[in-house]
Image 1 (tube, rainbow, N blue to C red):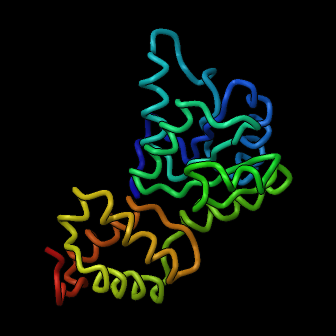
Image 2 (cartoon, rainbow, N blue to C red; image 1 turned 135 degrees about the horizontal axis):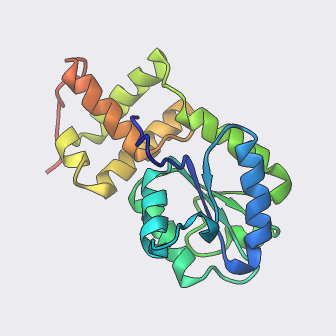
Length: 202
């Protein structure tokens, strides 16, 4: 998808202050795969509001990486996770205690990796940002027909878009963001390559 040339963050790393050093280590791994990363308040310029910068960075990102603390995530991290899911962005988690993290509320459907496997997250993110093959585009079209929700409605109903994104992810075997799915559908429709829905939901 087109990006803002002024400021773009491919990956947003969410973390608590106590995990700042680990977050920086994870960011270094992601950056070694040529991903742009927002990881710390050091990114905030003089005169900017932290909340505004963080929000813009999350909105511009194509994926979110959560560095899960040993204690339950803070309310701010929970908010960031909720926002990521609402925007249908791929979310990954890094945790020292993988099994414990998987039991936390909100993480049951998110892939959790130990810090030593941060490179696998980078590889998966790169895959998710890549263009869909012709075969994967056909899978997207089939999933669109199965879900039966129009493109216009998908643009305004995050839950419907999330449902379609999960179906596409299952069919093609790799994560894609909801915004990328929606953009592809809009492009296919504009080109006359998207078949009208056979049956739409109420």
